[in-house]
Length: 278
Ligand code: GDP
Ligand code: K
Ligand code: MG
Image 1: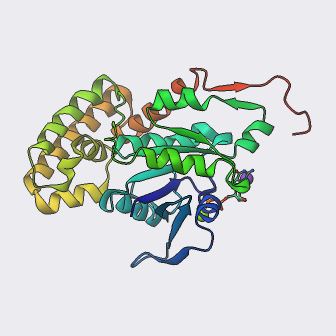
Image 2 (image 1 turned 120 degrees about the horizontal axis):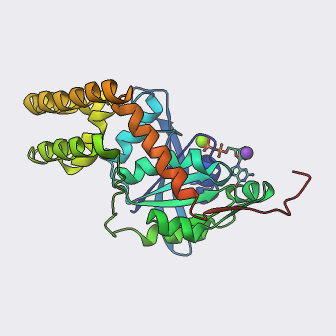
Image 3 (image 1 turned 90 degrees about the vertical axis):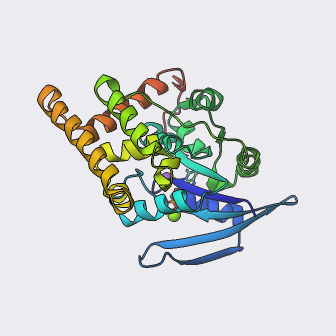
């Protein structure tokens, strides 16, 4: 069966959408070893069925919290056919930080623009088609609490299954980009490593100081790990002396910069006649 994962920030409406799509066809358990809830359900509508996974809410795809680890491991190892990324439309900028990371991982993504009622009452008009063309993935406005748009969302999400995703590649600037490229090349040569399937992403994770990715590579290819660690350390030293920063911070800044610039391209318009009562 087609597997659809629901990912998004906490409080973006994942569970509301999951419940609206699966009704009583749900199974709730725990992920092994952690007290993080695992919810699986079945979507059945007009002859279409799919398996739905309500993943733990996260703000980032680092591996600092158990929620982040569980969600990331699921996305990396279970390879869902499509990831519905639930975005709170009334908090677009903050929510897109996760979206960018999902796209950088090269996952097949469909964006659910939830809480459109809330955005509207704040006087925001969001151009979903424009956002879709800028991000290169479908964007479907919904109001999960009222089940509005949810079948259209599933239709668009399932239509992407089997289409090879185009990973997002944003520039991290003249200091980081060349190092990223060299690290990617080094990882690509280690064909037997699972990380070689996502060499650019794995290189980026090294620069972000991701212990899980480092440990995974170090366990299987200690020499490659030493090489990558040396490159990452050298970049950090350079950034500290020239810009008083370090790679992880610079990468986060550049991601936010990318999102800010994107949103300024007529994605959001504030109505002047907004409801004075809100
Ligand atoms: P989760 O943490 O992502 O699972 O989010 P929940 O599904 O628990 O939803 C968080 C809150 O947002 C709840 O109070 C929901 O009722 C509310 N909510 C969900 N969808 C919508 C929506 O489309 N519009 C509005 N206004 N509220 C919503
Ligand atoms: K709310
Ligand atoms: Mg939830």
